[in-house]
Image 1 (spheres, rainbow, N blue to C red):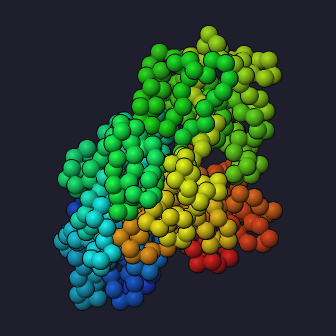
Image 2: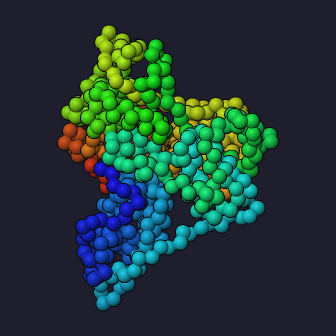
Image 3: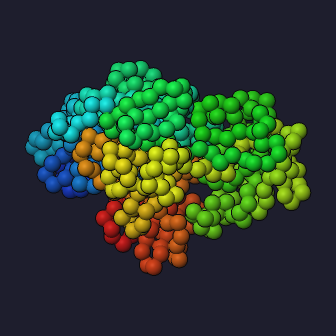
Length: 515
């Protein structure tokens, strides 16, 4: 379920009235509770003799912070792992892009009282003037590009920021395109990451439909398809990934869609107004989220995929069987170990010889990183743009973040590239610091979530292969934690309705501990 991410209150207050106070001994060291002041939900936390109070609802999708994990003087949201400072309310880590308010706390006569709400100004780190570039160019208008631009201004960078995006719309909350917005559960005004006036107010020059064709490393400028050039002092490549295109007869029909942009999603929603049946090609996370969203709109859905189980490669056979069963219970028809070979007259012909009627088709057969710019500029490439722990490419002053970046991951002890939204946002934030010369290492544990009807799947870590899968709980009862191990080491953890345990697993992976 999605709630308005701009809302931080609940209609029915929960927990104690913190304005009336609670006994200090009721809150043990290292713990949190949800209470309220008036109709505002407030999180009260204790660390030693100190008490902190902040708004109790995550600014991302409205998750209840008191059900999350307290780590030092921070709290992590149980839903999608955003992190906030308990001292300042600052949003420390994506996917939260806005801070929460702090509240004043008083202790008297053995009780703790939460009094007034206050907005604490963010703590800014000043960079040495000699290290600050005059102009930063960001190529890409997705998660990494947006969070980099926002973090630059949050760090009080006052130079020029130019964001060159090939998209037709300002940066959007892309996970929503296959989930709530496509399902009809979220209005379009929730989809943009920020209102249109955000960019002008923060002096971020966002240019849409701007196609960068080349990077001239020698002259420190990028070239655009309209014949103009844009000089830079430092450059961030955040070009993301593009859908793999279907290469069969009929793939160019107007009723055959991919899903990457807001316009793509609008086109699919328009199809649902008159359609009865859709065929989804691919049983990936995107493909099956699309299937679930279309079922919410009462569209008959058939899924065609070459594998024997959906998502087995990432989540294992047991989870694959559960996901198939879940979708089948919701009316999805699978055609597995099969592929489409032609599309004609609104029918999809399969290799098996079967034909499926399709008022429209959604293709979700994977994405590939957009690395051509980097490759043509002679940056180091290896299944992505190679970067160091600071997200800097082989050319000093040029950084890469998001789906194209292949970085040295200390958890798997190898170079990895992942296509996770939260990772892209977090890398954009770290890249921003390093564009300013702050030398911040990217050490986050990869995280993603996937939503299928009322079942959320949270996944932390990265396991492209494993030799042991340990399952705690019951997958089909929707109460489980799966540990993916190689040579005895836990590389990743997936869970259903074990949010707190998933957060703890993430923290232990960060520490390098055995989960």
